[in-house]
Length: 110
Image 1 (cartoon, rainbow, N blue to C red):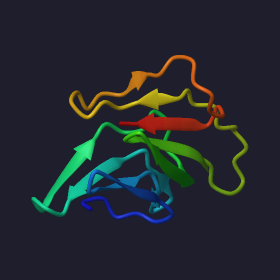
Image 2 (tube, rainbow, N blue to C red):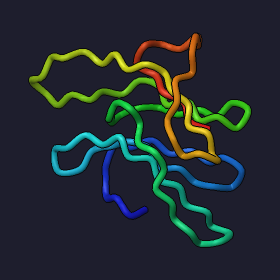
Image 3 (tube, rainbow, N blue to C red):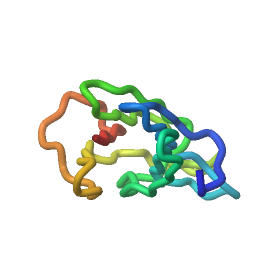
């Protein structure tokens, strides 16, 4: 992927590999990038609304759910409270998901 990072989450949807969040040089990232090994192309997607590292991802019905993680480095105390969001493949824009049964520190991508 074009963005170097550590402590990211990754998952696969329809054969496309996604790298999500992470940290690089003491900066927490909201970056979402996709790699299609069939066409050997890399694409930058819309970033998560809240940057985070040490998160987890799962895929349900083609939607990537990014859950947990933290935007904080040691010594900071501001809590994480982003709203869940979805990223449709066709528009590449983050949109509100509405009422979703996810913890307050979750995001979703499609």
